[in-house]
Image (cartoon, rainbow, N blue to C red; front, side):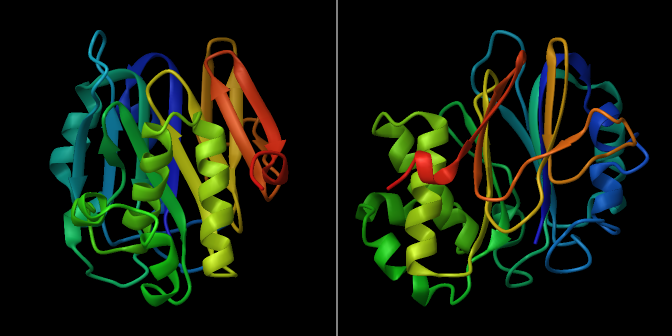
Length: 250
């Protein structure tokens, strides 16, 4: 199913966000609290982050569970960033494409994650795939529902859509093709975050100069706020805006 998290703010060590909190993303990989499907997220993990002065993010991804990667624990202790997107994966089809299927997906300056699943994959999404060019289909990052959803989002971004509308339009298109799909999408370019809620949980934590968007709270801070279902979230370091998806997409 997956759990994911995005952060914008002053530079911090990656581990401060992903490993150290009492209900960190690492903890959510084996004991999620608000996940609507599945009980563990042990089919891989990944983190993408931005370095000062470089708009293209770096990534570290593995097909193994986050708790078993000692190299990542060491990396997360020393790498600092002011913007990241990370995810732990519970695969729709276990084993599909391994590391290549682990979020975050990346292209241009963007990082992307999908928390959810598309019923009837792959047949249900044939009409959606037909809207992409042959080059876009051949360039899919993996043979998964999440990778195709990412390709559709990226197509809209490259055509000039803003992040929030690109996510909202994709959610509506995929839901029409596969009713009952769970489509919590998360996107960042290191300056803004966009996300959707469609069938799973999402929370925000904001304080001056910092914004966290996450599948579920990683600690007991009372400032965590749950995002209503069927909402588009847009955020930067100064705050969060919430809009019903219906106001973004036909």
